[in-house]
Length: 405
Image 1 (spheres, rainbow, N blue to C red):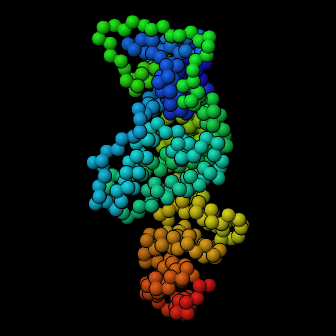
Image 2 (image 1 turned 60 degrees about the vertical axis):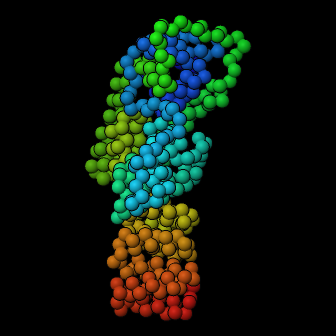
């Protein structure tokens, strides 16, 4: 990308080549600014000069780059302590974690959002999503008083889901990772210049000159390039076509087709937040379908390997769905996965406290784990909700005998 800074290849084109994400471009440019590899020739106009080892080139000042592109951070995110409220149904440490994550969204890459390496495989991507879903999925805090953190969790989870879906898709992931591999690392950009490199000339600054901040430098550098309108329009046209296809499929409730088209729309116009918001809405519907399909595949025996992961994935898509949690609990019991069964059954009971079958599943998990006193308490609730049920009578006998099977 550095070799393209030649006064002719525009900032917009640099962002389009290979599908490099805006935040990744900003991170690379920030590094180059810090090391002097790229400098601003004239702060007043935003003209830039790039030292590539043996030659320097000037970039023409022009219109601003797309406003959706975030500026690189000046350092670790600072959280607002006043946003922490000890009276909420969230512990203080979790509130700090939410605030920190929310503050990093604007400049983090998809890999950084998920907390994975660039070369992570699909299994690692999925595990990272599961882990983050347990913390940031808004539905995890159903019926809790979480104040303004509800908005933050919604925003965070949409970014997490977007990162997971785009990195999990072979086409979009290949483009993202191929482009990222071309960007120099901080160690590469801080290396000593080549022996034949020409030192940049020191320019006389006018009286009263004030050195721009890093953020100002980056913004001016972004403003120093423009993307050919024809190329912009071509890519936006393709993006709009895929976007309309996504909306049409969504109207017909063909959610998987809609999601596929939405991903392609984002690939052609990755700075359009409207597309990403639409993608998030479509993906929520896709996740509902996925959750049911995964549970069914376990129930009917069509999937016999990786049952624990299948159940976890189903629940991660619909954590506030009592039916999904209840069915997952039953299948976990069926396959002897007692701790997950207890977790799913407890969630189902919290979501639908008047359901006898969910309490019965929780009781069975507790009994088989040897927690007989807790099993008795839950069984009492289940008995009141299912009076005269023969399964309740059988469970009472097993609890009394302390049977773990």
